[in-house]
Length: 152
Image (cartoon, rainbow, N blue to C red; front, top):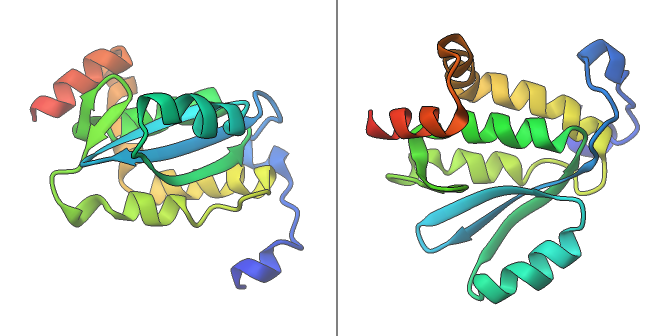
């Protein structure tokens, strides 16, 4: 099934454990060799207003709608902890992580339900899930996990 025909498919979010809470958008912006993963409930204000004042040359990789944006943002930060630079900023050591940009841009621009289901598959197939599980097993904060993973 191609992406165009998927727009007719409506997933049963209960089957996937996705609750329709905390709606918003996840975004990735790039500035030089750094990238930022963030969340917003108002992408026009955040990305085309506020962000342009502190990052006038930023490149918007993508802004996509999801349910449970706080949890998904935390998962991305944890899953990419080995690329952590500072705060919400990450740095790729080379082009081997470009799949994050490419695959994130494949999410729908306007289908919060499908994106929330597809996110589950993406995080589990990308290798990020193993880092998230390890952080949970160690029972440590995100910041401590990022500092530890960045040192490895």
